[in-house]
Length: 300
Ligand SMILES: NC(=O)c1ccc[n+]([C@@H]2O[C@H](COP(=O)([O-])OP(=O)(O)OC[C@H]3O[C@@H](n4cnc5c(N)ncnc54)[C@H](OP(=O)(O)O)[C@@H]3O)[C@@H](O)[C@H]2O)c1
Image 1 (cartoon, rainbow, N blue to C red):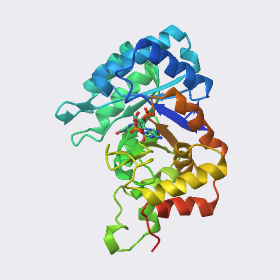
Image 2 (spheres, rainbow, N blue to C red):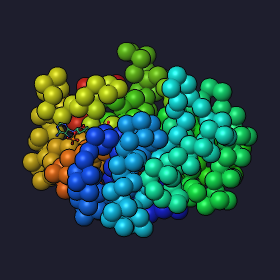
Image 3 (tube, rainbow, N blue to C red):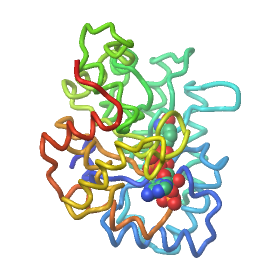
Image 4 (tube, protein in one colour):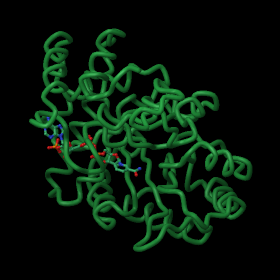
């Protein structure tokens, strides 16, 4: 698939949980990922307080395969505040490049909306980063459609992605579209300015974070006794399609016609082959809705 001008796999690997890897583990992580065609890596300057990028950067250097990977990182979260000022964005990118030991980032993402953000300043920062060759493409995360529209009014580069939370159990962006105007249990509430349709209308790729988690970092729903119906349906489909149940959970997102990119956060090389199979199946409409309902969602 295309992410802006860059060819990327439909499944990317998120590096939020790799901060305590040994060098040997990081080498295996990158090597296995590349062997499975999972060559897109999502970072943020804050993961492990910078340690995730350091460990990854050293391992990537040892492989000598910078040209075989697509690297994305994020900035804008500071202790006790969000900061999308020009100076902070520029200094953050320098820090990211140093920790990753690379000359440029493929994609820079603004991690969260900053209440005090001034799009004119962000535009200046993006121009400088683009002109210096430090960043190829630009995106945002956790922004609603109006925030993106406001930013896009000023920045000269196209916003190519909005990275948002989406999993079977956290799918308000899908649920609100199914429950338009329904008041029961607030299911029809639009929490994001119809971000799903907005991104489709504007050719912005939604990247989905935490595709296997429920709540906000509450844990995975996989094999979790609190989600018996969902796990039974995932097991059934895993058997039917001949892939792992984690892959079925990812395939459910990939089946949506918005052509989203799934960012999985596994640190376990043994699971990577399974994840890579997610894009190989074509989930039926019936199975997609079965999973949606088994996850506790209802049709009006
Ligand atoms: N933009 C944002 O605000 C934001 C926020 C959060 C995350 N992110 C990005 O999204 C990425 C993915 O997030 P995430 O790590 O929460 O994603 P995730 O893929 O939903 O969860 C990964 C976790 O699930 C575990 N897991 C996978 N399969 C399992 C199984 N069968 N049984 C038990 N546990 C299993 C993994 O353990 P193993 O390691 O053992 O496989 C890992 O701890 C992050 O790395 C980060 O890049 C972005």
